Length: 349
Length: 283
Image 1: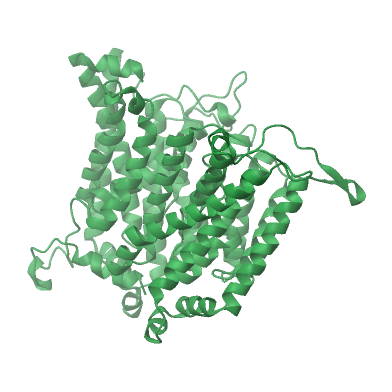
Image 2: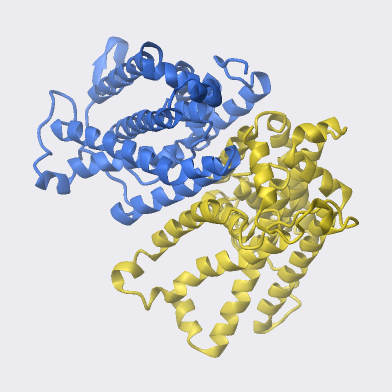
């Protein structure tokens, strides 16, 4: 950390920090978009860290060479990194199916509890089962995509480009998905499940679909993260950073609005990763506690936004379909969260 | 039991309950620790128990503190969200945010280290058939039984309990019949807060006082609540026992590091086989 602060003083340092920051935020923005897809159908996923972690580990063990010396992990086949990413997505989807089958048919709250639990159990498995993912020693030396081909210090730009390209692809995918009839059905289910059912929609299947899609994207984000940081351990995927942080991005940015979610990721990310920068200039009593204060403020942000601006920075726009003009529903310019009111009335039943 | 009460009566899955336990634990620790000693609380022991009057005072402080905290949160956060028409989702996310804040404040004040109420090793005494039990553990079991009996009395033998159960079944109808549901909600938070603080102090007595102890217990807690049937205090007690015993016994066959996974498996099995819990009513 100290090194980071020192490097910032110079112009090059500032550029490097910004590049690294944007790369990290892009990865978290992918997580937040994925969470948004799930949330948009009323799935309360409190285990983002679990899917993030599974993706990271699956891609890492598949692309790493066979273990040597004290290392012990499964696979180690050294397959190409993009293939590892694909498997990470598959792994996210498999986990979603396993979790979704017992919980999605039941009360909304059970999935929340089950997902928060699965994150805990996956961490404890990774930590304690010998020969699976090298336990708490973590996995090291994970290559970055194209890292061998790019020489010298330019690789961080490549990393940023990779993260941005994938973020754009994911953004395009989720906007397409939301604008499609499928996305329309998801909104219908969230706003009023009974009506959606009465219109012949198999709500469980739609929700499962959204859960799987979101989880695949989370797995992908995990894989990118693993290849970017080069080293992962169970500690990396804490509930705070892996789950609650992403939720804060969603709530602050504006749940339901993809652009808002990306803005939220940028704002919350800057707040989170920017705090170490000012640590040096703070008075000692505050500087030494800056990480706890940061955690406190993250919690405060969630509660404050729920209380005073539940629609987030950018509100979700009311819409039926892109083929129907905005005015049909009445008051087209209203962004004050009329949809939120409907969400609330439908979930408070 | 506190969690199931809030869950059942208020329809809030309080993800901050674990951290409220943590607060109870630390408030009591504050009283028995050095700072408390300056105020003249610490010192002395009861017979072979590892604590004295200090902890009793600490327990009271913890109960009052956590109950107060819960009421303040209800007033500041949950009532407003309810007035705005918030449902389970909004409550759950808000309580998660609160949970993060509570844990951060504990760390700010006491730091990330672990503590014990009384330093040193506490020898266990032998009872029937070579089973060793610490005197403190008798105390913990005794207090739990007492709390359960008191809660039963409160819920089924007092007007307030009746009002609570009515609010749980149908808040609108309860309101229409002249029950002040807001007061009932405050009361429920107080009872849940007291139980949470009690559990936190007992946990600190049995194990260690650490900042994330409460949060770590959240999953076993929810497992116990779901197993026992949401909103059913007896179910929660039995569910809690089952989850606890299952966790400990499981180490016979599986890696100790996997112990935290046991409650999760229980939750999934219960949800698959009997989603309303062992003693839950059909709604």
